[in-house]
Length: 468
Image (tube, rainbow, N blue to C red; front, side):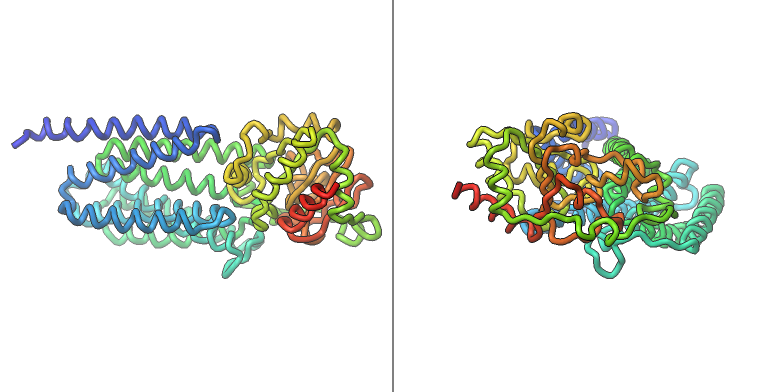
């Protein structure tokens, strides 16, 4: 029989390897070219962590561990194969939620299984923190998922002073009950009361937030799930869980800050306002902006312009994701490049419904990473661009953000496509984006609208280009 000290040392070796793989995987995830390798290394680290933790704690017999890994692996494989790229934000939201739920279950099981004398200050604080953050994360992520689906829960911002009052009351109640629980860990009813109120708070925190803020919300909920896991690590005295949770929590907070900066808004404004939810001054309606000013064009007319240009910048948006047009866009890009045209893609940090959404879609279509140019780098080049082709983007190209201080998107950094010599916008209609305001770019003198399904329009462009 191995001594406890030697056994713990042997267990810590794979933990150390897993921690190293987590850190290395996170580093690789920072760049699209190495992201796949980073994801694989992180998955391997998680497998090592799960298997050795189950063996170390003697939680389950070997055959039960194998069955669990088989069922979980099968579900994961099916989801990876069947979930469309347009549904990836919803899947990420659910993953965040499940991470929070697991932390609630771990904390609850540890608390119920411990005797009153075993619950010291560290355990009581870690237990209540893990359960609280996990409950908020799970229900908040579930609401985010439903908002992204556009069913049951409205996807737009919900304005109500009642929700703000409720959130304040919930926060105060949770704080008071948590303090009482930490000082009296034997009072079980306070523990369950905190979890119950946290569940409601997770719902009321996310319901007011509009769909345009979902990239920020998803990043923040991802951070919450990591913090909940970190707290669960202190509950279990598991160093690897503390390390992994800290990495997820910190990276999620950094990403949240990047998203907020890209929208020129504070995190408090996102959480307690919501794009379109804050009060703003009067803005022009669609009839004032568009009436008699919109120029519509066909794919054949657009192709004639593309046939003689030197530089094209493609601006992808959520509409491209919905239409699943990324592959035919790559085909169209290849046609232009064969004619000697320089083609680049302008990537706005919050385009789509999750951080990096456009990067993921274009990577799926094997678009070279070098062609994906971030907003700050591409904006100075628009005046030298012959054609800016917008596919399904709206708010991230709306010049009102710079010209109307009363607009809901005032101050949000945008892609300066209006400075291109010609702007072509592929869109089903003149319907507004998530902000709910018209876009005067669509009525500009240098803009041509190509109305219809994004994929069909680009297919028509490809056919028209081949006939020239």
